[in-house]
Picture 1 (cartoon, rainbow, N blue to C red):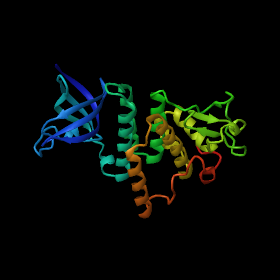
Picture 2 (tube, rainbow, N blue to C red; picture 1 turned 120 degrees about the vertical axis):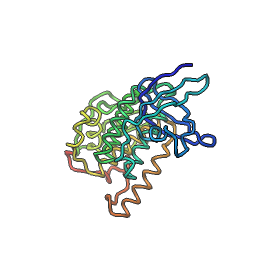
Picture 3 (cartoon, rainbow, N blue to C red; picture 1 turned 180 degrees about the vertical axis):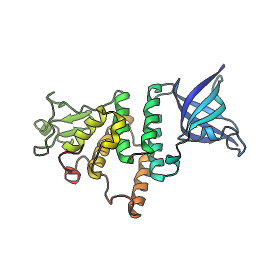
Length: 279
């Protein structure tokens, strides 16, 4: 039993007892941990501001025999831009859910800077673009990054050419199959060359250059659908936040705030065509 300090990102919280809350935290020092914040649901609690979901906080925790307890919580960054916009908030919540679902207890400390950077980027840049960047980098950090450069069947480089037959993408196999080999993988959907180029670029680029990218919405959503199918194969299920994101997207479309387009399926490349230079 001991007391320690930790930089933490508050992934989620759920009510516990009459006034407490169980928190899922991603800490820089110890990875993902669960801790209880006692009395935090009382309006006068000093822990309240520093234990809100989607907040970066400096915590003091008491390590008990069975459960850790938050004794002090000072917010470092409250991410006002995320909490004040429903679309950004749902995307930030999705990032938190992905980290929670895909990282083990007391693991994932190396994901702390990735999630923190993702929330900062989400405060500024288009949601779907940040989501693509975050998801491909998350898969890479976890060792699940799909093969985007070489054909999984023959091992040859997969060229980016809109004029040629499109390559296939298999979430189950974990990457691309070149157009010359895709006939041996009939169940695999196709991936638009522009979407493949985008995913390659997002994997290797400096995140600070994200604002320089100009990507059409259909191509972006096609790439996002590819990533989500890959994540589903690794997590053995979908994310609950994705349904919320889809609902929010439909609402914003009805309000005229976003293009009236549904995310295309990787198996339907006709709906994902974009200019040959997506980046």
